[in-house]
Image 1 (cartoon, rainbow, N blue to C red):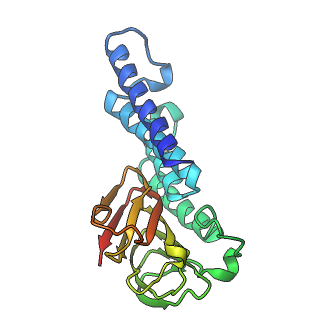
Image 2 (cartoon, one colour; image 1 turned 45 degrees about the vertical axis):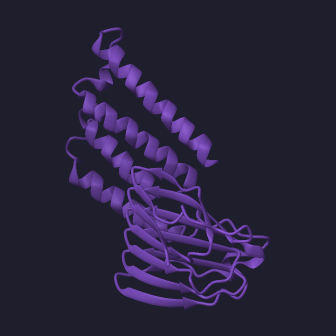
Length: 252
């Protein structure tokens, strides 16, 4: 979904929540029985978790689906009759499901292909590691793909005809340097997906950056979009999503 449409939907949901809380406190309407015993902060957190789940479903980001579901289950454990399972059993189950689905569908929902390239032939599959790794990627076909789970990694992109890079970090940390890359036709797309992790990308100072990253309960520190660029400067469009994590965009 387009970032603007997604932001509009989430903004409307938050406005609806604010209005509902006011009407509830003014006794204009009563909450259903299932909400009995749940305070206003619990309801606010629940709505935020629902927004995170919607965002996770849009991106098929399993961490942003199962963990918020677990939080909602903990908040409504009395109404659901699962007090014997909350909180730690539910959180452990959410964690295990996130890992399991991430292993079953390592690239699903993150990598969309580019100009007819096949994903399984033109990208590197996700790494499942608790160790530090360092990789140099020539990206001869103009398309690179890297993911990191439960570990840390540094990637150096050296492609001389770069068109697209798909990057994913879940429960880990990834740093990617593009200072050795040359965009094909002076345009490149970098698709970043961060969930419960951190990603740092380093963009050449000569590139013009267009930030289209959607953020849900996370942070995107853009230190690179503003700058002085020439008319023929290469254009770098950064897309993707950040959920319960952090993305840093830096100049190098």
